[in-house]
Image (cartoon, rainbow, N blue to C red; front, side, top):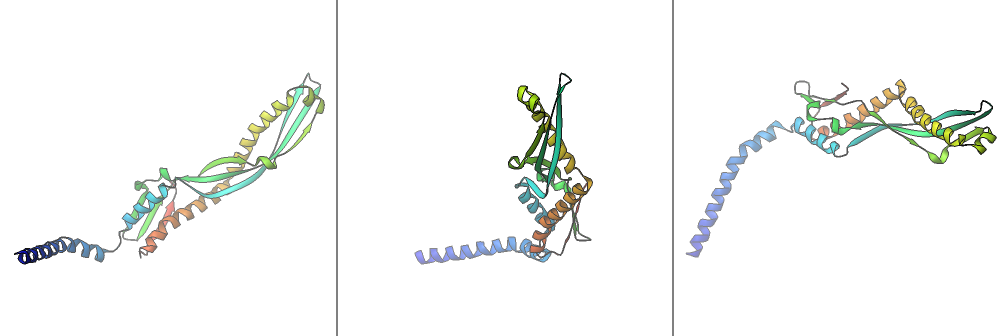
Length: 204
C-alpha cells in the first residue's frame, strides 16, 4: 500500500509540475521572444541613482580678493584685504527626476531623459590658504575696526565666489558634464541588456 501511495504521490507531483509549466510557459516564451524591456531597465536605473541623492559631475576652484574699509572720526582709516580660495560644486538633485521625465520612443529606439540644470553648491572655503593684508595699524589696534572689516569681508567672499561660479562658460561646462554623466547612467544598463538604444539627455 505504501508503495502505491508513494507512486500516486509522484504522479500527482509530476502532473502539478506539468500544470505549472503550462501556466508559465507561454508568458516566459513571450518574454524571451520580446527581449529586455527598455522602459523597465530605465526605471530600475532611475531608482538606483535616486538612492545616491545627488550627482556632482563638475566642480570649479576660484581665488577671489575682497577689500573692506573703515573710517573713524573722519581722520583714521583702515583697510583689510582677504585673498581666499574656494570650491563650488554643480549638483544634480536626482530626487527632482521622476518617471515622467523618462520617455522611450520604440520607433527610433531612443530614451529621452529630461533633467533640471545642475545647481551651485557651496562655496567651500579653504581656510588654510587664506591670505590677508591690512593697513591702518592704529585704528585696528585701538578699536573694533578689524572685527567689522572681517565681517564685511566674509560676506563679500561668499558672494564673490558665487558670482564667479555663475559665469556662463562655467555653467555651460557644468551642464555638458552633467548631461554626459546622466547619459552614461542610462546608456550602460541598456547596453548591458543587449539593447542598441540611444540616450538623449535634455534640459527643460
